[in-house]
Image 1 (tube, rainbow, N blue to C red):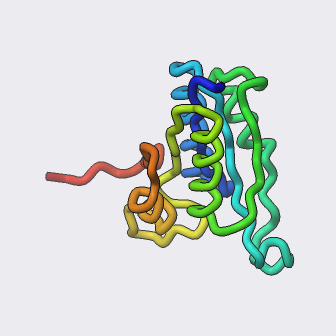
Image 2 (image 1 turned 30 degrees about the vertical axis):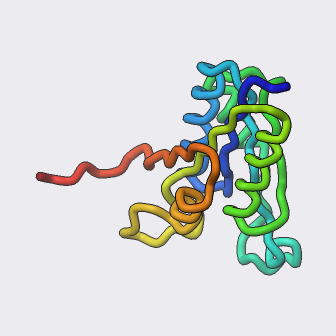
Length: 145
């Protein structure tokens, strides 16, 4: 039985990289494992996604540079849309007896300028049965009161 698992979504975006760093520091503080999940849909499988395949090496590097031992980090590629893939990974963690936390960046690579949250983070917040942390961008401008 695993004491805890932090599941973080990674799509190669800067926001996702920042979320990986936050998730790694949190996993370290909790003595938990870190599972970095990249969702691969039908278009990406067919090579039609319009973007290069996401390499997990940068995410693994960011996790270890944030202080988490590499032996406690898993890179997982999941079929499906990001929300379904992350919920599936969290469910597997719960089935193993782990306390699970889901982590995502506020917007991924498909984010639209001017939006605060992306569709995946909103959908996770609505459908998750485990706590969800939405990590804001590192350099979000502060609103003037």
